[in-house]
Length: 298
Image 1 (cartoon, rainbow, N blue to C red):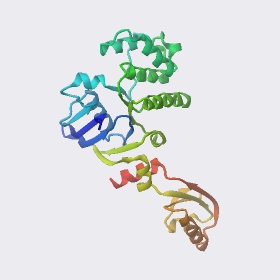
Image 2 (image 1 turned 120 degrees about the vertical axis):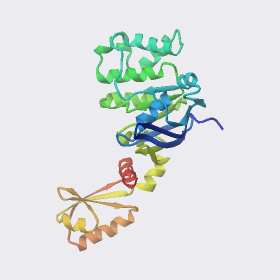
Image 3 (image 1 turned 120 degrees about the horizontal axis):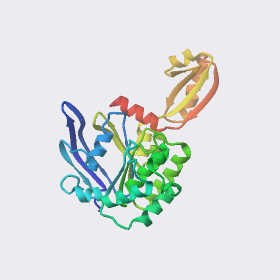
Image 4 (image 1 turned 60 degrees about the vertical axis):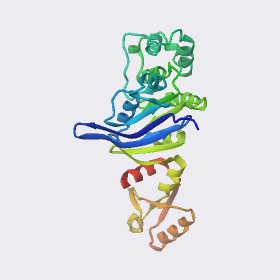
């Protein structure tokens, strides 16, 4: 059995009296597309910073491809690439110069062929000789992705990579990331766009207050926590609310159900209550409802 791409064992991190991580343990296997989700302040960025060696855990251990991020930090960082949430860049260099310098940090020379390949996939070749200051926010975010990949790490962490990125740019980025994953790279994604995580990630961990509160395959989480939804626009929405529905405004009342056979019974009860059904919408379980339910239970 191959070693995990990432192994996190009982990791805690305290900043004075504040505990950012409270005993996180998880493994991400090689080749996975893994989601790390949670509300702001849940500990996601702290955990990524610990993996990247930007902060040391108060206790516990972290490994990247079997290399301890503290004891064997050189090898751990050679195997690890991170796309940060913030737009951090050096304003004095062109895109190509920046990627050559980044290559040098890892002791890699004559890396132009791979740099050109990355620039091509990210549609950055026309901007290769442009100064970083002249790029749009979306282009700068693409350069951050290129920086994370320039030393060909097998493990890539994307921390909110599509924040502030337009739809076309986002689609191009995900096409490239899917290709990397298909080629064997392990991808860890944090995002507030839960439809992205639902589409891309095979497994998901959810954090709250520095603890893992859910960890399973995406499909298992959808099955365990989310129900189907029935939205009805009623002439008498109060009657629907009395039957256990949620008032969504403008006459709409939402209900959850587990099987489609339940819909017939629910509609019969609405008729008996003379609620006046005017319109119906059926919805499949989605990760957003799972996330809300998990955070509420936690």
